[in-house]
Amino acid sequence: MKINVLTLFPEMFTPLQSSMLGRGLEDHKWDLKLLNFRDFTYDVHHHVDDSPYGGGAGMVLQVMPIVKALNSLPSRGKVIITAPPGRPFNQIMAQKWSKLPELTILCGHY
Image (tube, rainbow, N blue to C red):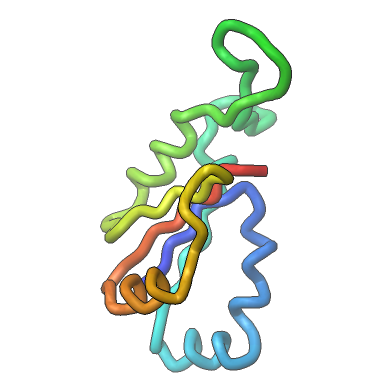
């Protein structure tokens, strides 16, 4: 299985590269590709957020760096977007998705 993770914090996924999961990576039982969508920005400061349209408090992520990161992948498989109002991840999802050849997880919250 190949897993692509798009995130602003790829270092948070370092534990997946150690212990039993790390041995699986070394033995090519699965593959992990981490993409920082900050690397797909145009400006020198690599901004990925912007003020919300119409004003208001807080910031929102820009779409363009995320789209460019997704488009940089030769294939994506099923794309999962993590979000607070989404469905909670459960064992049934884990079993179903583990059978897929490729899975892309977009971690859009920071």
